[in-house]
Image 1 (spheres, one colour):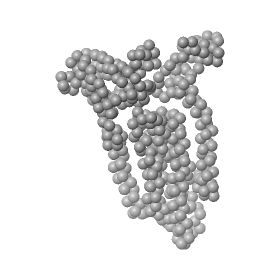
Image 2: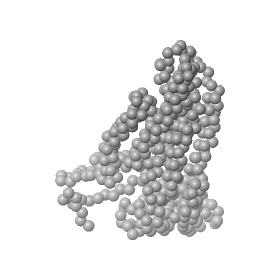
Image 3: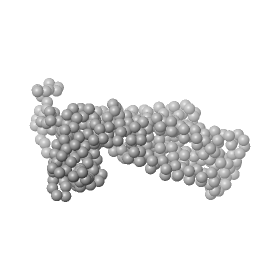
Length: 389
């Protein structure tokens, strides 16, 4: 096939990046190519594909993100009629990003267009939560002031405690309505259409909502206290004020809920997906290699185009067999001459006889799985035919 671009002959080198983010890979590859490849006169070298889209996205985000934050600030200013409350709301935005980036790290998601869209949406959610938090603090402060009870720091602290603790239910419902709505997206099966993009959009919001809620319960009242203490006209009292007993009980309840809920969520994510609609592993194919039988199993008993999780189980004479190093590659026999169609799988050893792996297949069709493994006695290899739907 003769190809041209801009009136010149062109040749393509296809690269399938599976173990690294696009930008980091291209930067490393550009450095290696510039050191080892001499480009003759009249030739040019360009990096296209997803990397090109990522560069365009970064250029657009340089003005999309500031414009978005400015619009949010203007809307908050119109709502409150002052610039102080919007600044307090914006103080909590970095704390919501803590949960976002931690969840992205745990899920092994790289920064992409979908992730940045989720972060921008999180800024709007954080502004909504900040308005609710400040609303109840301001209402409690105005109530104490109207009733003539705002005389010193103890009264201010009681008013903030009332607005922060006694109004915990509506704040919690504001967060949970969004959090629960995003959970089905997070636990969607990877083979569903659009799931790979939607999960990366939802991940920053889910992680950010968790940390911003708990940190907001401590940051907003503290900042509000520092702000309002300078408006007191009456005498102040020492800052060493004993913490109300209800505040201590609330802290213990929050710690107890965290100890119970976080391990449960982690278990659902790692070991118990079948309880939320994801089918357990089912055998897809089997192959006999000498005296060792290899079983390939996957969720719902099938491979699909896109991300796939699967397991290999090694048995010898009906008993589990010990294996050490395992290497797995996928390729399409119909396109064996194309290096881009040779795809390596990520392998993590669960136990000595069972291996869990992940692979991203770019298209449906007939694939062949190359398996090379080492036993304590020798090294072996085989091929298994797999059909991706």
